[in-house]
Length: 286
Image (tube, rainbow, N blue to C red; front, side):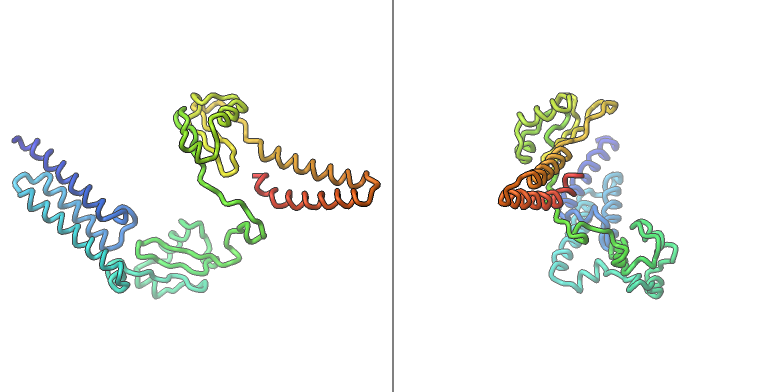
């Protein structure tokens, strides 16, 4: 067998072996690595390169070496699931850099971090003032977790007492001009509704690269022709306007009627409609 063909066969064998064993090791091997996983990854790559190109070496011996370097960390991971001490030994543990708004200089020196490196890591978290940080920790993966002080944390609907409808993943009902019936059914819609919505905006499904239905049942599309402008969804603004008109009509009826019981009924309905509009206005304005 020619050397080049020998290398091709060995490379394919090493690739297949690494693929299978990496699948067994799990997704942690392709995420942010710990010290131990970093060493394993480098060694496996080096072993694969050697057994692929060194035609004079025994391929089976190289296969055994790769197998050993995969089975040992796999076994250790299984043991580490039941032992916190073992996890800390192999994966390490986090180091607190900022606590109660105060930088812990000794911990920085322990991890050989400079002030410039700390500031750089904070900027990747969109934090530009150390004084805004309540707590920051260097994780075992090398990433920094940051907790801002309460007054600098982003405002959420819960802070202002708003109750929002739980969002669900948008369903891609058209891909590459083809209707996806499975996702259309998951969105609770049918083909008739989809064609009707496409007619409203004046496009055909063949011209649609991607179309999605969101939590509120609105259809958004992306066309193949980027120069064409698609009208913005108008269902929610129209619904909000209709609700406001109903509330105004009820208030008008209350003022125009002379019967006390009718006036009371219209006033109560108007107040109830105002509450509905207040609860839904945030959703319908988005």
